[in-house]
Length: 60
Image (cartoon, rainbow, N blue to C red; front, side, top):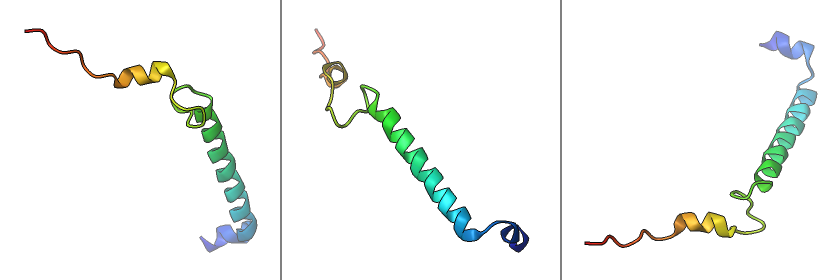
């Protein structure tokens, strides 16, 4: 493993990895914010709250 680090600078590799992971996290959050179901800034849409409606009473 030490031969690999002779090819790459460890500090530069960690900085590039951090930038990549931050970009990936930002992309995932923006994708989720663009959906109706997972947009936590605008609140729940009326169509999404219908899923949590109580079950109708059974007729006997």
